[in-house]
Length: 319
Figure 1 (cartoon, rainbow, N blue to C red):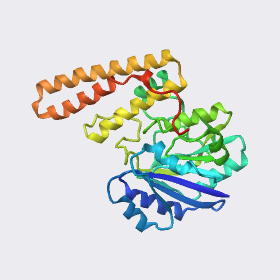
Figure 2 (figure 1 turned 30 degrees about the vertical axis):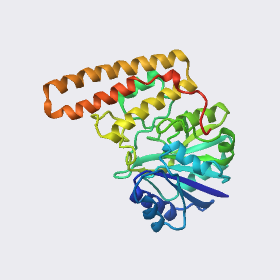
Figure 3 (figure 1 turned 180 degrees about the horizontal axis):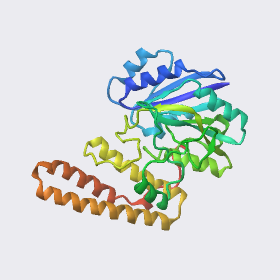
Figure 4 (figure 1 turned 60 degrees about the horizontal axis):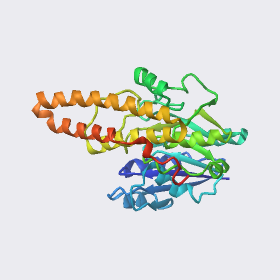
């Protein structure tokens, strides 16, 4: 048997080197190990840094920033391994985690994919782990209550609606039946979409609390992993991720929910953004020192409001 681990790098070569080192240090005993790293158009010295540190892995130059789904698909497209693990570049694998995930898949033929418990690399505390489709009600509850921890207090595997793409192991047969990640999602919700497609074919998805992945969180995207609301940053990267998150959520609803639900999501999203714009405009007027920050936020929010969710294609790209 063979396990392929797929990692996408975007300007995090030092973290990728740590990640790969942890994979080698805690390699599975139940399968032969294949490590593939996609250099996703970082525009820096990542290829050299990673290649010199780990000359024995597969290093793929994408030639452009294809996003999380597009980058992983370069590995998944021709993969014939028994198991495939999607692993974030800012993650570390604990001893025994690979074997625990493989053992669950071997013992449960109707389980198509399993997820590791995602914990802080700093203190081992559970990170936010959304485990349901992001319904309108669910998103409202998350806004009020924050992070979700489905592995808390559990030792045995638990069935979930969706798994976290930061540490998800897929059965090879399932990958070949469900297809690739939809690269129409640049970043965010591509894992939700894939899980929805897998469940529609009758496969179960399990979280395995005994298998842990240590996650720094947000190193490539700049987004905190806690699930709690934080103040809005006005850096180019942070604002791009805000846009991509909302575009991805519209795409997810376009594919899996009714036109009415998509319209309601658009209406609620734009209402919240309009309130933010009004507040930010007030800050622009009364605080000249913060005008550059306020202007960036206003432009970003107006760009999001300008998204037409009904123009987003239903058909999956690359899937």
